[in-house]
Amino acid sequence: MGITKTENFTETQNELAVLLKALGHPARIAIVEYLLKVNTCICGDIVNELPLAQATISQHLKELKNAKLIKGNIEGTAVCYCLDEQTFEKIRNFMDGFLKVLKSKNGCC
Amino acid sequence: MGITKTENFTETQNELAVLLKALGHPARIAIVEYLLKVNTCICGDIVNELPLAQATISQHLKELKNAKLIKGNIEGTAVCYCLDEQTFEKIRNFMDGFLKVLKSKNGCC
DNA sequence: AATATTAATCGTAATATTGCAATATATAAA
DNA sequence: TTTATATATTGCAATATTACGATTAATATT
Image (cartoon, rainbow over all chains, first blue to last red; front, side):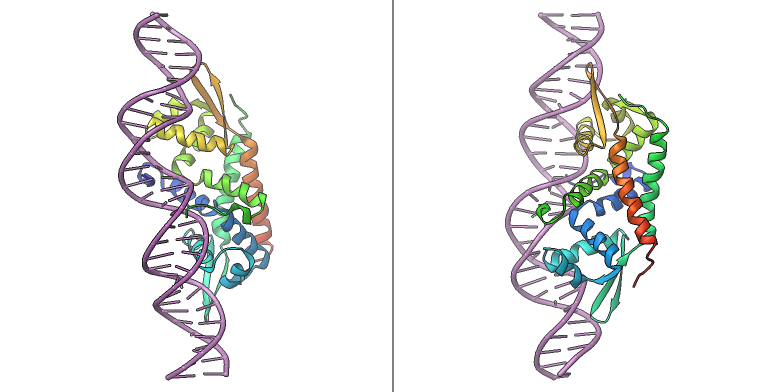
């Protein structure tokens, strides 16, 4: 099929999966790491930084934006991109809570 | 294409992408959350818990195991599954370090 | 107005993912 | 040894993803 049965899972599970999936590609990791370094930049900067075509970068930026991992503001002909702190916090908070419970248990097969 | 150009990215970026991608599906989030709750379980328990076919669950477990997010130990005819704390820590540490830098900057468009 | 700059979109090809029924495998129980 | 139990694998269909060239759209510059 290739289609995910989202109706079987909770809203929280689906939302988190969208975020992690959006970050689950090395190009998109590279993009957010670059944005972390330079704070803000335009699409063309990333095209110069990564060995991928402009159309491909634009597509990856779209996915990151859909997941609200980044924001994009139009500035003349360019678009200024930056990270969305709140969304990264959501992931961090999940991982943090998850690990706290996991460490309090220490049971394995 | 559908093929990721991993050769363009660092080992770290590729490894992290594999982990996040493996968690980037609601069924696999549901599986690790269930494992967190019950500590250890066998495949059949998850099949009873989630509304997906046995073959589908088995495939998701395989992906989680490939990414080393879970461990599986054979016990008779069954396989005992549990979470791999170290791998979850890798993700948490990345997100934690990432957010520390992000919060120290506060620059956006 | 004509032209350059920047980014998004379209179309396409190749490959990957999701999901399931059916089957295979492997151990345990009778 | 036959049968039951538990999981993995195979094969398949539908859909999604990745990547890029070409084009489009929208604003700047000349």
